[in-house]
Length: 366
Image (tube, rainbow, N blue to C red; front, side, top):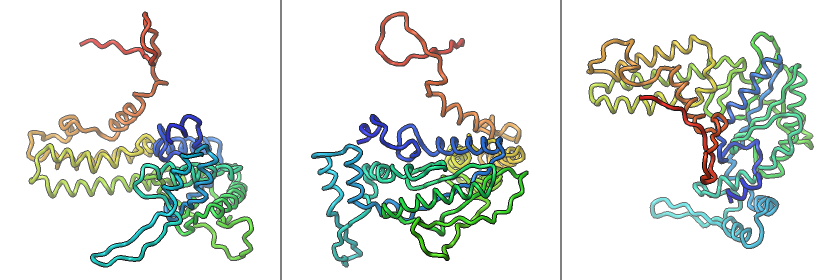
């Protein structure tokens, strides 16, 4: 199924979840590029982060089978998929007590390799309901946002698309969790704006006059990163510093019980993993955060270097062979792009060889 979907480019380019060569970092980097472009053009970005309640458990089997047929899975294979989905049962057992048998009429099996593909196909046509806003999807995490020079006009554009996307959710039997859906107006901090325009999560045929407006927030966590309305990254950097201080406290308390190799492993697993994720996105944060993170890392590395010959704090990073904030950024960027062919120079062999991509290798003298 994956090969068929990739060969005919069936999955929308707006979907980054469970798709080859796409992922969270690709989505976040592209989203940030759009935000920077909007800042350069003095535009408002009204971003709506939609939370879908129990998305994987709410997939309607009949609608899914119809969409599978429309994208090209037909004949005996469609019948096989139908038998995989229809008439599934579940039972709950606690000790010697068992519940009655229940038939499942919706949802895809958790842990199945087919479930991500089924869900991507199920939500694949959501982009057809969007007209003026941009759309990003990572599985069930949906982000839509328009851009405009005038804040009120951006909200109007967003309301039009929100109404259409709510119609789509209703038609596909998915429910939006309004209390967890957040709205962020991202704009330059030099522009003063009063966030008085309201946004409502209602369908086109909604006759209710007392719909609750979506909550405005100044910061939102999206795919592991905290986005501030002014793109200052203060919320995310505060979160990272808090996590690093927690690791520092842990290592300080256990430093005398563990060897150096284990302490370094803990540093990689708990500290650098948190700092590395998304570093290519938030590295342009204010410089005072760079120095604050390096100070926190140095304090933590003193516990890592406990009872060793390393005494000078200035040589901690080099002696332990652990990176500072800037070095970690360089490592992450190089490791990510090293295997990408667009950054390499093609090489033409002097004789006929197997048809594979070949690139020039730099000469190294030892």
